[in-house]
Length: 165
Image (cartoon, rainbow, N blue to C red; front, top):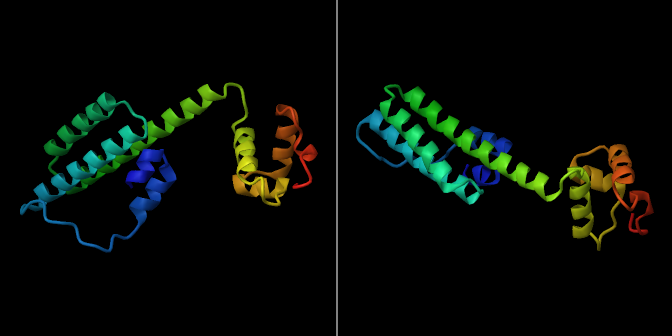
């Protein structure tokens, strides 16, 4: 859960939440409602710190923490508390994801992000036999699309790359 938030990985967060937890949750209070509220505050704390590590400004993360913690404390239903801390987890993950996307767009304005990833893949696999198909598979793209995008956006056409391809 924490790494998914830190990386802005929404799908990873969904998978993490869907996993069966095989251990036991420690006792944080004798009262069942206080137990779930304390657990929610622990999760909220971990989520806010993960978001900060992911690039969210600390004041923003702490303000969101404050807002959710007040709502959690005022809640009288277990399901509502669970819904609140789940919503917070996703809100933090979305914040990180948007920051990362904005940062990527600022680094490469007007550039096709698929081509940027393609170039990074090629650089990382220079000593391996690769093809447009293997690059497309690794990036989960259509090979024809990748070839056309590379031809229209890059100084070097993919089909002209060295014989490794």
